[in-house]
Length: 233
Image (tube, rainbow, N blue to C red; front, side, top):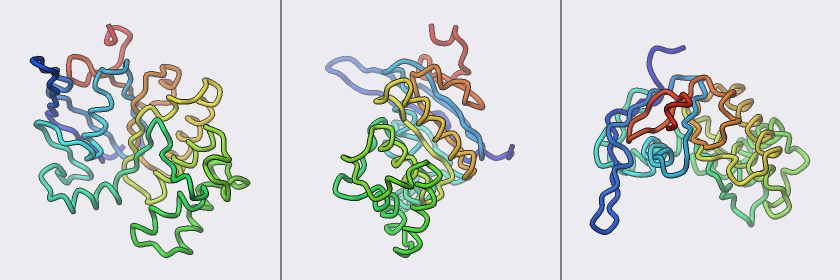
């Protein structure tokens, strides 16, 4: 394992106000993710998993703290540089696939690459490769409405990997799927990250996914702690 984390979150604080009350979701949360590993962030909804993931992915600005990606502190960067890091260094998979409905699976995976500057032919060739790995060779010219939920989510995973990010952030990636489909999709996610050498941080409340992880944490009282059954109490 590399000595330097590919993702390092330090002293992250995030609070939300509701009327006269202030909810402290993160209160000094810290976590390191190293190249090539898959790390789980488990716990019930509302525990702070998604807030931590969104801050780590530069999708949400915390009240305090630092986020380092490959050694670069990102929260202090100007907007255009943070946008470039999100596009080139970070892949994100959400609970819902968010595919573009009017485009085929192939186009959905090729488009982010073209936005990043890759040629159309190169982007489509890489999209074909990734979709074939995901078992979707026969479906790559189908639109999302012509695909099952599991197939749609596998396209979303291929799209998140397409620009060869250094870190993949997955927020409840199987949350909308039935148990059997959920297992198959997560196996695809696991296999893809291993094959492509991408580090992954996966937030989930699905405890059946824990055996896939190299390390597992939970958010308790606003901080990240190693996962044990007692940590969930």
